[in-house]
Figure: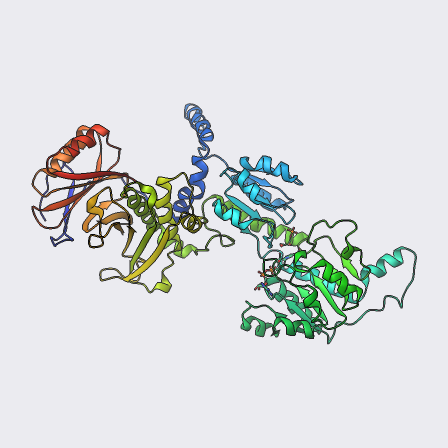
Length: 627
Ligand SMILES: NC(=O)c1ccc[n+]([C@@H]2O[C@H](COP(=O)([O-])OP(=O)(O)OC[C@H]3O[C@@H](n4cnc5c(N)ncnc54)[C@H](O)[C@@H]3O)[C@@H](O)[C@H]2O)c1
Ligand SMILES: O=C(O)[C@H](O)COP(=O)(O)O
């Protein structure tokens, strides 16, 4: 240990000298720094942070409120309440949850134009299946809309691509209406087999046609469940209870789940060929749109009965009419339609062998209560910046992983910010390599969050883009930034308990503003690395110079000829300029040769102070970097 002259009260920490990793650190005690919770890294850094930035007026009014509040000594709420538009009917329990944290605007049955007009005033919108959340809606939101909550399962009415591009999180309520949908499928199955709907209408019209409405039995018949997910599995269980043979087709369903319920998983064609009843439970996607078409109906058992509680678009209507007319399909029961509500003269709806319900699958009292709470919790969590377990367009990161990665999330963003500021003409970043040094096996280290935050750090300082976990990969790709990730085993000192020893960010094929940041044996690349020390992000490497600077406030990097008195001179100039130094570290190649000094500062030095630092004869180059 050696004393280094610096303002009184500083703690001094000298790392062992070695070349080129030697570093001398000066630790200036600072006020206590509370580690923010993971949700705040995500929230302030992504969702809520942007929400605040984009609402200066709201903040001005909050500042005014604060003043009044201080004078009158009333409790102060300085956080503006987000606005949640509830565009379709939602259960009271969900609305109550929302109202605790947000201004809730229940505007049902908006026309598309009315939705476009309202959306820029909303931080979140909650819809069911009737509201189309189109690309135009995301554009009209003007960056304010941060969450779309789908109070149900199917998200085919939300333009996910547009949501992702705008960094808008889409969450759904995937579990609360499962049983209701399965029960409705079974209700339609039984009604179809026993002509309940037609017979009911007939009796009410004064007729008594017993032989006309003779039905067919369910017991011992084969039902093919197409889409063996949540609803499909519940339908399968219930169909087995009715004494049916249940087969299922789902290219992605695990065989053990099917085995556990006693269901045989089969290929698409085999399901068609064997089924007396076909019940549809797959989502509407590009792959499933019109999957029941002329070709498909040519493969079914003649006289098959079809139940669709999934999505109308899965069946090609024209093909279904033909199949009904020629007896290939004996009957169909439909809860869902390509266009909802269907036109009055819709031929499928009007067909005598078709029974219909107006998209009632999820419409039970119990399901709607559950869905309302499920979606309200997801939207409130997302507005707080928490990652939702039901996120549709963002990686799901468990809360355990989130908690342990929290400090690294902040480090990652700061390293991205530092690296891009070292690039001369900041916009030309194309090749980025992220290196994670960890004692853990790659399977135990989820780096998606860190990669997203590095992209955020890289792109936001040099653009007006808003980046979060939802759109980081899209933005990087869109800007032609190639991100490669490397993992290196930790060399020592770090344990499995610690997720990472260090993170390094290297930008290749760029010119550096600060030549000492160049690494890669002289090839053009700027590189910085950092680690977590005492729970806080620290800069540990710039180019080939090792150092140890707490990454708070801003950083001055200064390359000089290593000689006595430089640290004092720079510190003195900063002190004269009323700039508080939080941390200082010197890394050098060998004594009295070149050194890179990193100085953490709480305030931004004036141009005059920076100029005077640059004018110190031993200083060869320096750069001021904002964090
Ligand atoms: N009518 C209603 O009110 C109502 C209510 C709830 C759900 N739904 C709809 O039912 C569908 C299923 O809901 P869920 O909660 O079971 O969803 P889920 O995601 O749990 O299940 C869907 C299953 O379909 C499978 N699948 C995907 N592509 C397939 C294909 N090409 N062939 C066969 N299977 C395929 C998936 O692997 C998955 O297992 C969704 O479209 C949903 O919108 C409708
Ligand atoms: O996908 C769903 O959850 C169902 O189709 C229910 O839709 P709904 O919320 O409009 O009833």
